[in-house]
Length: 223
Image (cartoon, rainbow, N blue to C red; front, side, top):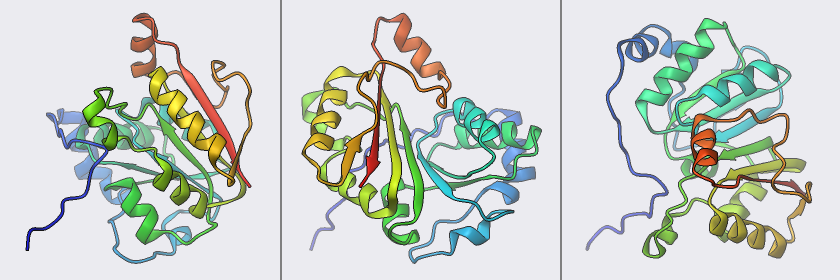
């Protein structure tokens, strides 16, 4: 019997590790990297101090994530990505500032949520500029859909925040429609084109802005 392959919201493009990224992983990876587990884990124990945890899905090269972590030390951050160059770069940046409120898992984010986390656990979920999969035949690969929105609701604490940013208007409208139809979330902002102060501008975002793309920040509270 053939195995059914899951639809992924990403393609594994490892790219080439720079010397500094490789050194960061080799020398400091033990301080920041956490292995994926197929069963639930007490995630509070993996951090230096117990604090509420925010989960970030996909962080690119990690520059904006590093700034968020550095400026919000009242939270612990669990960040997931699958691309080694970005992981190495984020480790490098966080190590330079001796940050202890960040851990990284190199694995698919939805599987982390499903297997490693208890329900009603997270203080927030950040998803900044997920791949829009703009070709119609690839729309099924988009990370945010009815099923994942329900998964986010399941893992977030009541009152906690889901923050999504995108510069692809059709995707933004689709996400807004999904949230509007969900009984689990309510919007926290009315103007989706105002960037919240908590989110620094990313390199991807600045490139998109130069190309004339309007950025959407969608914030919703879990009921």
